[in-house]
Image 1 (tube, one colour):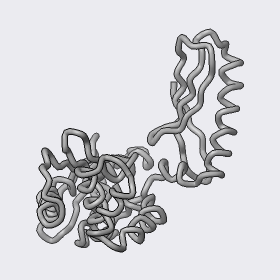
Image 2 (cartoon, rainbow, N blue to C red):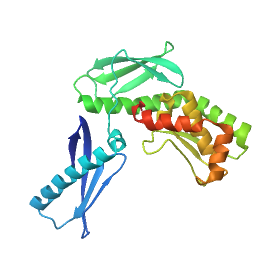
Image 3 (cartoon, rainbow, N blue to C red):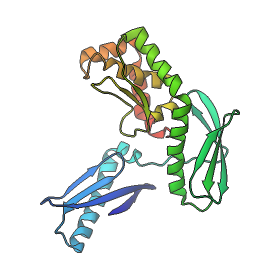
Image 4 (cartoon, rainbow, N blue to C red):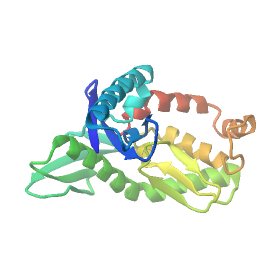
Length: 242
């Protein structure tokens, strides 16, 4: 069962899961608020807990606005220019009698999006974000891989298994024990030096799989002003298109 709460104009999904458990638990993930409760609860009890979790969410969002930013939907408009990987692209919407959304990039750096004319606007905006993530990840994958390899060969000389761009909302990047580098496709919408910082950060994990002083020394040796990039992500990361 799924419902929603609206707070400061942001619609937040609440997923209700009834399980074989004796306690009630609330949590906020990158995609929803989760309410776990025992199966034996009656309808009135469920409604009472739902009211409680909504108040709990409001308190959490007030204490930590970044939690609410997870659920903000970036609004795209017809004719808007967006900057991706240092290049400007113009969005062109074509409302049509169709079911799904499709898109392509032209030689003129236009992004032509064909959109169902009667679709729910919130769902359209969410679908546009996911589509743009796929389009630009495909378009700039080689350039991002080249950038990772440049920093690795110049400063780290480590073995990398795979490099992936993923529509990841929970972090900006990751480095696995199998030496896989994953980068959020949202970074394509960030200034290039910010993307470079995340690349350096994940490459440093190939040498130090922690955040020890030695790890941060590796990052600082390559990028002395890395703290400025972290401040940028903290202040503006939630505004990045995806």
